[in-house]
Image 1 (cartoon, rainbow, N blue to C red):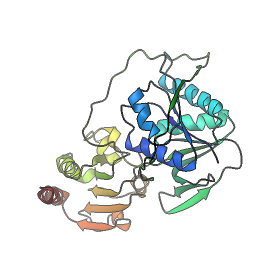
Image 2 (cartoon, helix red, strand yellow):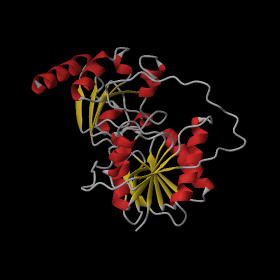
Image 3 (cartoon, one colour):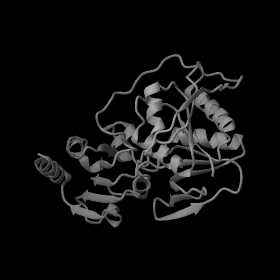
Image 4 (spheres, one colour):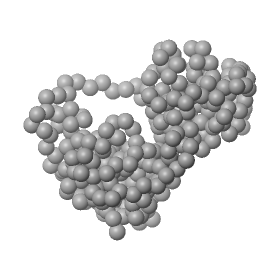
Length: 314
């Protein structure tokens, strides 16, 4: 049975939805080990145990840059755990960390995965979800980045007993970057964009006003996204940008409002389970991939939808 290592750059008081999906996948492969590049409380460790985690490797942050620390922690964890497969998040930072360590240990890497079988066959989407492919490494440690909302979160029936071990991770002697200050991001009640089951995204058609988009997202308990045109115009933070040069999302429901659906934007959302498009232009490319389309003014459609959803919830 192959051994699986799950790597987290940090772990809050409770694992996030995407982190729980990684743990669920690891448990389906074999008894998982978890490595974290930060401190982990005993209560959090006990939550990991409910996913079959028997060993936890912890390396609290030091004076090194966050990237260098994460690299050193993952490399040390791979060597200590002797894992056959390493599972990490699919965001830009973790993809870079996994790729660099895969090169260092002469391993293999598959990104944008949606599943990994017990015999380490990786399933992933290709060409923005146009088709799926399966890949298998021919040698070395396999590194896999898993797209959120690909695995159903499923704790084990019986919790394991977790052994917590401090991981000795040394940064390069050539390290020249040190953290001199940090600033926390504004906390939002909305789910993280890359992990949300529902995403409502606005584009050039919102004409600078994301109010209707935010109201519908809040009514659905979803996240707010945007096209590059909207973020470049300064209407919303670049953190919300979805597409080839932004983040990739794969929610259960993706609502596109006032977005034309150019190929660059499709690349970031085409694997969504259900796509609903709202646009005044009947010839907008987004209607080609939408499961449901509404030709109309988003300023009228979105408030009506939000009001009806709130009425039914009441």
